[in-house]
Image (cartoon, rainbow, N blue to C red; front, side, top):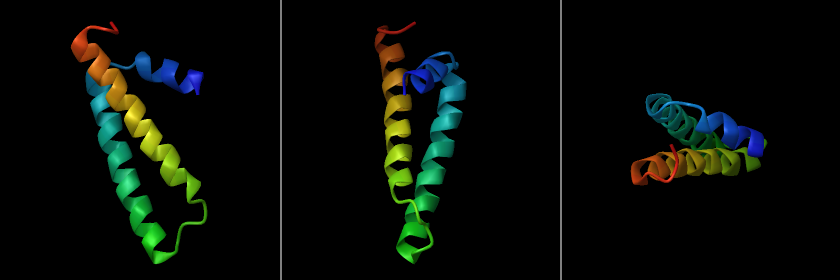
Length: 68
């Protein structure tokens, strides 16, 4: 997990926003698949939600001047 956060910190704000949109789309698709019973690993939904939270946290910290 630390490795993943370190990778996200090194991205620019624009790259983070793109990654955020991609993650939101992925989450939408996964939820849809879950409702249809096509997804086997339901824990992956939780992982994507946490990725979204990490990205939002980093963006907010930058807005407040806490992080670079």
